[in-house]
Every structure is written in structure tokens, then in C-alpha cells.
Image (cartoon, rainbow, N blue to C red; front, side):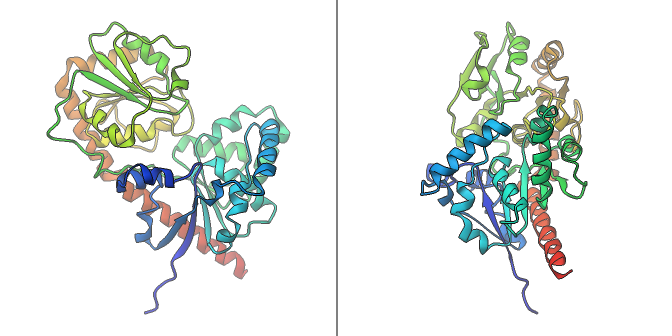
Length: 376
């Protein structure tokens, strides 16, 4: 029997991936940072990427100028440099997969103009929040509706974001697909020989983290809090004495912070995209009880049940967050029970293999649909 031809998919990233590879030859680190590129090959997808698009060339200066212009007009930079440099590779591929909308904007523009002929799959991480912010700018919104209509599939990690994208971009539900994110449950797993120490952990780099509410909820409590984030997320905040902050922690070391913590807190401002989801799933995979804000992204799609596999609190509610913290401090057995249930939930449903399998199915569907259109 003739073997089916493997679909060629070119992955595009916001930043060079070779830098990540040089930091340590850890398969789990690469697979996480590469959005499952290494795993997807077993599902009949021939995936590749190239960092050449980040190198300076004769187009760089012009592309940067155009990017600055689009930033002023639309509020987002549309940098064509990466796509132009990779044009030869693009011509030899079947599908382009943009892992974030920043590297996807140029693809959407060129697809709309008819310059890119092959299917484009784009991941949205916060696009809905941007679209909500420009509701008063009719021409800008009209522009984005046109370019994203030309994209073959938009993937998002939040059910609420899917609804917002369909609404604000006037797209059919077929164009936008929610898929739950997945984590490497083999790497993120309980470490038996490490006992929890006298601190709780809060981790996250995205701008939706609500450390202000967390700091107000935890001040004066008889426990230490360790925070891992970026400096910009704590700008202007008074950091209580019982909080220790780390800004530069390698991906490898993060696992050990999870393992040593008593439990994890993920405070998030209410939003429609998947802010906090990755840290949440990592913590749950480590069999940690997690207190997480019940945002739009968290309410639906990730099988979360209050006091079963996590603790859900209202976004921005200081009193409710403080009550949840005290509950877990006073009930260590509950931490263990909730953590075990959390581990089972992620292991069964939200592992990296399931994520990659779903992603491969989307690529195959998009590829076959494109072939049908060509035959018509």
C-alpha cells in the first residue's frame, strides 16, 4: 500500500529558537518552547522551522520602517522581514503555522493580498483583547477583519476568546478553533524525594498577572511567598516583607520551585484569552493545589472544579483570595488531595501529546480543505 505523503508545515516563532537549544539540550525544554514541533512528526506531519528570518539583510531597514508605521496606525507592528527572508522555504511547504499573532500579522496581510497562496494557521494569544480595545476605530477594525478573513484557521487556547474573535472579526465558527493547551506531564511530575518547604509560589510573565491583588491578600500572613515574573509586572507595587522575587529563572529550575512549594497561586485579571493557563497546567501536573482566578479563559474548557482539582476565586477579590490562601495553609491534607486530583486531570486530558495530536488534526483538515478548493 502506498504511504501517504507527509504534510509539510513551517513553524514561525516570535523569537529565534536556536538560542533556546544552546541553553541546554533538554528535550522537554525544546518541546515546550517549540509548541510540540518535535512530537508532531509522529502524527504524519513533517514540521520544520528556520531562524534565518531574524537575521539582518537588505530588507531589514525597510521592513523596520514599515513596522513602525503600522505600529503608529494600527497599534501593532507588522514586520515583513521574517516572511520575506523565508519566501523560498515557504514556496516548498504546504502550511505555515504562526505560533503567535505577532509573527502571524504579516502572513495575514500577504495572504489577503494573494502573495501567499498556501494555507495559513495562526495562533491567537490576546488578539481578542486588542480587538476589544479598538472598537471605536472602525477603519482599523475593518482592516483586521479583512486580513484575518483570509487566514485559513485561527487557533486559540480559550473558549471565551474564540467567541470574542468570531464576534469582533465577523468570522464563521469554522474559522476559529479552541484547543486546550497541553504540558509535558512526564517532565512536570511530582518529585518524591523533595518535601515542600515553608513557602508558596506564584509564577507568570504575561501582563494579565494581578500581583497587586495577591500582594494585598498575602501581606501580614504567616507564610513566605516566592514570585517569579518580569520586572515590568511589578512596576509601581510595594512588595511586602514576606515576599521574595526572582526575575531570571531558567526553565529547568522552575520545576524545582514548583516541587518545593506548598501550593501555587495564579492571580489573573479578568480577560478573554488564556492568561495563566500554562502555569496553571504545569502546577497541576506537579500535583500542586492551585488557587487561580476564575477568568473568562479559566471558566470553560479545562475541566476545573472548585475544591476538587483547584481553588477558584473571583478576579481582583482580595478577601476571597486571602480566604483561599488561609484555607490551604490550615488544611495541608486538602493540598495533597486537590493536588492529586489536579495531576490526574492534566495527565488524562491536558498533556502535550493530546495538544500535538489535535494540532496535527487541524493541519490535516486545513490541507485537505485547501486541496478540495483547488479541485473545484
